[in-house]
Image (cartoon, rainbow, N blue to C red; front, side, top):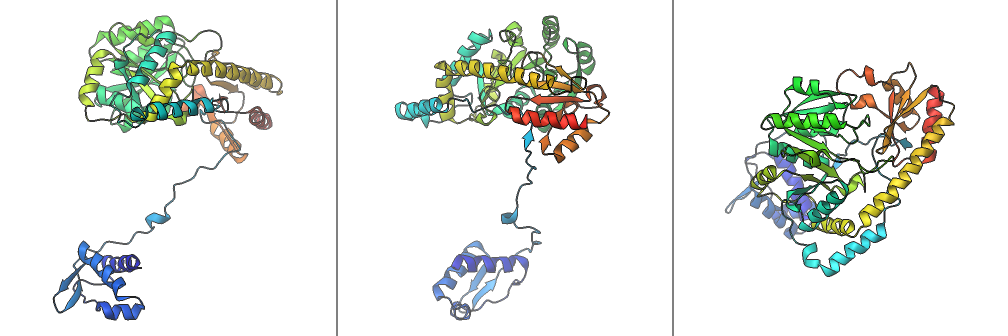
Length: 448
């Protein structure tokens, strides 16, 4: 009760309803007026005195201090709510994964094991690069699956793509010009620009990122996804990879960030080799996360840095802590080193392959063979449907939204004129059920 009285009087003082120098009633008089105890008023006055809203004069009483008045908020903090997106019955815009097959019981068992057998490690502070256990597990995995032979001390753990891109700008400098694939994953350029760096958007050709555009741009750093480009799905050819490596080696300060975001999922053979493993000059930074293989909500990713950049990272990050909790790192380390991670990837690769082929079959049976054309590279967790229609991408998305369907197009990933990539629907199938995709095909049939 005394806190409520304190807040009311404080509000009146700040708003000017109680003016500076105004004498307040005695504690006994105010208590009688409000039908409360004297101790309630005494405690409220004590709070206001302690914070300087009141001052007392001996044998005279309590007076209002001179406080600069401020305008009242139009909306109270307690009433604020974040804007909510309209939920869609079918939403194909995101890149969620199918977590229904994730071995939850196995993950929980590993977590309990660490908590009971290594409780001190479970709760220990984590250094700037992440736990040694997870970095060692990742290094072993990269050696087996990506032909990347690095020390665990060249690996930096971070909370997702956003933090990793921020770390890149902190290392290489915000004064660098960052070359981005166009079309491309817009979140990456948003992070670079939010970090204070400038970006230039570079087109692709049939071999990968256009070298002519790279050389004309004066870019210092390239952020590319050579093994499976988002959103076109293109794979950078071997010849273009060596052209890119030669470009980086030509001038001091040039680097390539290799974003290997979903290269585990190839359906026509083994995963492709990395650009990092072909680099002999320490100019490639390898980036990957567990967002596509496990779940985006895990928020664990990593960078593999050349030794010179790792030394710079150590100097610049001495006062930093890892942004991923130690407990999750230790559990993931056990999940990888115990072989469960690769087993899970193999199982999900098979499941995604079956779903992908089923969707292709549904498209063939939809009666839209003349209106739809599948574009894909037998890899990744999305493919493209080229639509034959006079409607614009925006018109289709608006009509879809009216029907409770969220769609995304290749043109959404483009900076500049999108005519060349118009009518290219992105189908993120990793978390889309057959019934949901059937609803999308029914919608497309109606409008096409």
